[in-house]
Image (cartoon, rainbow, N blue to C red; front, side, top):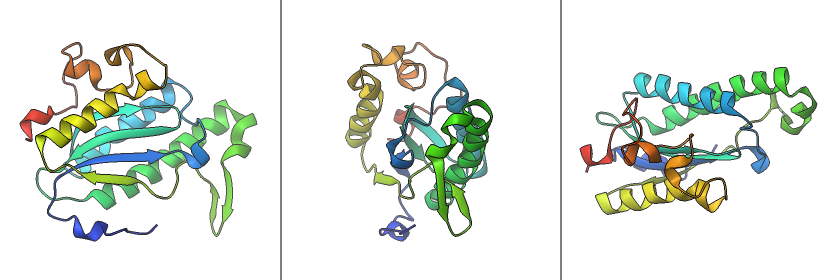
Length: 178
C-alpha cells in the first residue's frame, strides 16, 4: 500500500477517513457486520489512544473521524483495523453467506480473500468549520443513499448522538477538540 505522503502527517491529530469494500461490493450486509466494525473501533481506539468523533457504516464503505490526542498513529491504526476486520468479516461471510464467498476471493501471493480496497482516503481536519463540514457529510450519507430521510434515524451512524438522541457511549464530541 502506497503512503501518498502520509509520513508527513505526524503532527496532525484529527482525520476524516474513508475506506471502501473490495470492488465496492456490499459486503457489510447486516447488523453483525456493523457490530464487528464498531467493536473494532472500540478496541483500536483504546490500543492507539484515539477518539472517534463521528462515523457512518454503510454496506460498501465507511466514513469516520478519528482524533489522536497524544501521538498520531493513523497508518498503524488503519492497517490493524482493516486487517482484523477483514479476518472477522471473511469468517462471518463464510459461515453465514457461503454462496457469496467467491465475491471476495483474491489470489495474490499469500492472500486468498479481500474485504477492503488497499487504499484509504484521509483528510486532515485543521479547523472546526472543516470538521463540521465532514460531520455533516458523514451524517447525510444514508439520506443521500435513500436509506432514511433523517440522519438520526440511521442506526449505524453518530448522527443521533449529535442530535442528543443517543448517549455518548464511545464517542467524543468534536467541540472537545476544536
